[in-house]
Image 1: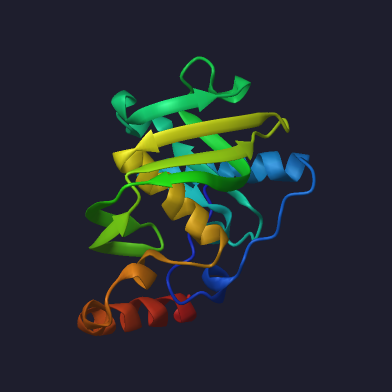
Image 2: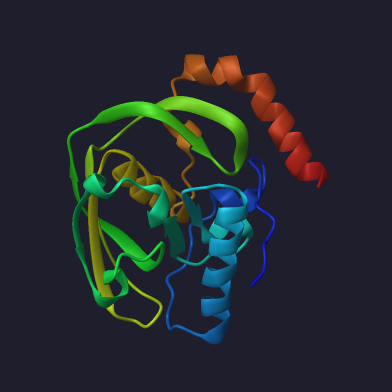
Length: 184
């Protein structure tokens, strides 16, 4: 399909709450395919629709980049046969347990990695691009990706979890990112 431009920190769309998907259309399928191509090109593990300028409740995950032992449970026809990628439509978290702290990055924050605390286990319910229900539960990196991408749909960014002290330390880098976003 096509590789789309990834919106960089400072782009106002990253702070917007995404609207629910009412129906699967050819345009939504094309968007999901483009998002997968974009995520792969950028060497990412996940990508949410707002990151490519679309405010719909859709994100994709590169399942092939995640260790199989991190999958706690997976249900739904779109998860049969160990697919390399997954599109989640109207996802919602139905379970969070424990806590893990680790390095986290984001394609909208090039070359920025920070320690962020997230749930150790996350379960998400969604539908696939055919409107069929799916459930995926994972730990570690998979849990981090599932919740990080869902945050994007709420207009929340991973830097929102950093301390004021850490944000102050990153102020110059964040200003440069914001300036590059507004210049582009």
